[in-house]
Image 1 (tube, each protein chain N blue to C red):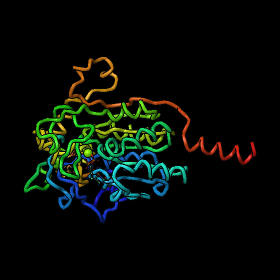
Image 2: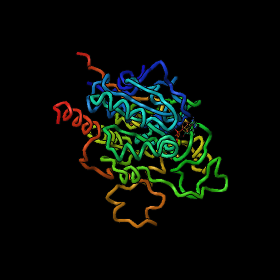
Image 3: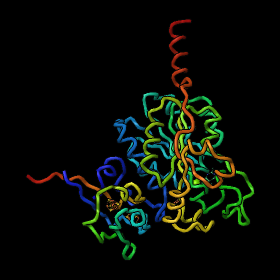
Length: 273
Length: 66
Ligand SMILES: Cc1ncc(C[n+]2csc(CCOP(=O)(O)OP(=O)(O)O)c2C)c(N)n1
Ligand code: SF4
Ligand code: SF4
Ligand code: SF4
Ligand SMILES: [Mg+2]
């Protein structure tokens, strides 16, 4: 028998999931369930949307209203759901490829509009599902099947990108720091506008192997030993921050929310003004 | 209420994360499955539950018998 949390918020008949041994996605998915439980949100009022990728399989495992859509487009579908049903708590789970490569344009424009959805990025710095190709978050110099001699791209910082594009709540979590990350996800869901929680993931099968980072245990240890808080990061130089993960809130603002603004127009026109 | 440590070896994939980060060295992976080797040392902190990717270990609160 699984725990009460898993019984309530997961589709037990589909577990154990097909993610690899030690895949961080399992830990992050539990964090999402725990955050929703802590907030006491009615399960029927949560719509979880995902695209395609290992991360995106979460929509199949989690027991809410769920949509497993197409690669890169989860935020576009979620925008549609939120506009039709602003009363729903719309949550997107996306991989780094899904969210920042093919889906990058949807991401920045949803952030710009400040539509009230929460995006939780399971950011393992690689395309896990398709065999370890480098993604827009793979660090410079690291390896992937498509970067056999080292990645010459410079990576996106998805959190900073979202904040720059206008997202009104942005935070960074890690797989190792589950307790803190649960809290950040809670804050993101509670927040009214567009929220994004960029969670440092763990893909032992591809990222770990390609980059000789060891297995899941070694990758978790690395996160434990190399994570700094937003406050510590603010006092460090770029060189000092090299290879470090950041934990905490990056941005919070009370910009007007998109579905609210749309409703205001409807109300105004109804009054004939 | 009493807390109990429960394992579900059939869901365990033997990744070793819970073993490594258990503060009391209660756990071991034996033949790729989670095994409790020091039950009496467990402080029911729940860190294993928080970090198990496969939900194969957790703390359950059980009502004390009168
Ligand atoms: C339109 C389209 N292009 C490409 C693919 C192939 N594809 C499937 S998943 C994926 C990337 C997965 O990486 P990420 O989003 O980081 O998720 P992860 O598997 O790492 O969790 C790609 C390129 C696809 N399914 N559809
Ligand atoms: S390939 Fe990587 S991301 Fe995909 S399930 Fe395996 S460990 Fe997880
Ligand atoms: S509850 Fe704490 S002490 Fe007990 S097995 Fe889990 S991690 Fe170890
Ligand atoms: S963390 Fe979970 S899957 Fe990994 S060894 Fe422990 S019980 Fe098994
Ligand atoms: Mg990925």
